[in-house]
Image 1 (cartoon, rainbow, N blue to C red):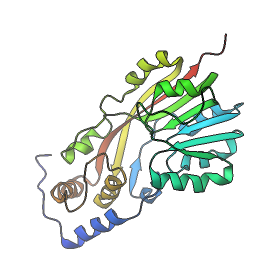
Image 2 (image 1 turned 45 degrees about the vertical axis):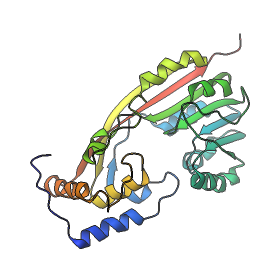
Image 3 (image 1 turned 180 degrees about the vertical axis):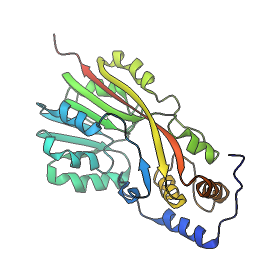
Length: 262
């Protein structure tokens, strides 16, 4: 971006960015950005894949449910027993509030590479995980024989061009489809679907980018308008030149089954 000449933003523009910075964000709901960005989608539908694996099941565990948004959108497909986990306290409270009418139990638990799930062995027909921390060995433990695991994940190198624009680097570059595929066998799981996709995340305004970076704080540590103003101004100059801010995102989907009892 050496050809871009950065100008200092007006006080009115800075005030606009600060207003976006203060705007509340709850759960994992980016609907505020609907007309302010283009979030390209992969060729698969996570929701359709979930509906397919839930067919005929009697129980499901959603690991790292966020504010329960996905389970709510899938309520018509849910089995009799629904359990979810969430580790972020504001989202935990929100998920409990939202999912209580469905009869779902929401447990406090961190989702991480080594975190233990607070549920018994072989308790679920289906385990789901969308964009949350993931311990494959725990998935294998809590699945019943013949059960199915389905996850959609953000690749650890996704949006590294966005991070670089703010002098930041990916925190989990090892988090790739190949990394998790290598762990399946030791957890007693075998993949029957594994796909990667690269697409674009396009912001129509710098304010929308500010809102997003505050909502996803692990992309740029300590991000705020005050601390990162020169970087934000550079993105404004880029927007004025190109008409939009385009970054590269990468997702993968993985579906695996636990071997049935012999």
